[in-house]
Image (cartoon, rainbow, N blue to C red; front, side):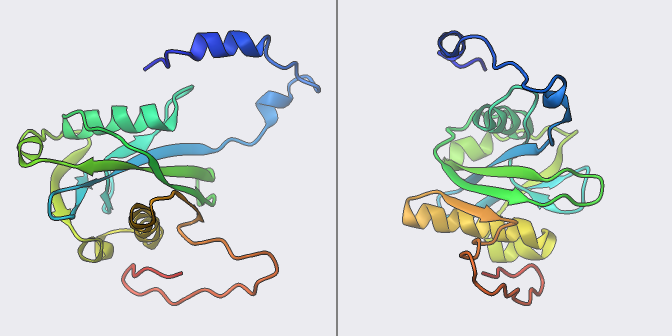
Length: 194
């Protein structure tokens, strides 16, 4: 989707800033950006997808494409993955994740995907190249089938819903205040730690 004011806003900003050092833009670090939707049913259970390309559960969403906003990405990915348009609400979590193996560090967004009606749930049609099935579960039920960092991120999203304000996290954790001693809680079976 092209934002309605994009061209006007770009024109108002004027010419792109010149590189102060030729080629610097191409040498700057790159980050992955992705966005997911916290979608629930009328009982408050979360919609999880069994991805065909990985062993862990996921929520609807995915990686942003070039020049695509996180909001546009989650709308597109949700439509592709579950076959229905859902109303995407406010951001709940902005979570930085560290580089790991071949993957760059990244910024992960979780948006409020709202509560689906029974009719909407009946219309879900999975993209067979993305997911083999879906189910609604509590976070505790899903936790053993997810990476601990995703469990923490989703826990933050639920917290944001309850408090009515978005949360910034780092690898799913609340950042420590400057100068505070870092303590890492024991995690067992993906349980949520502070």
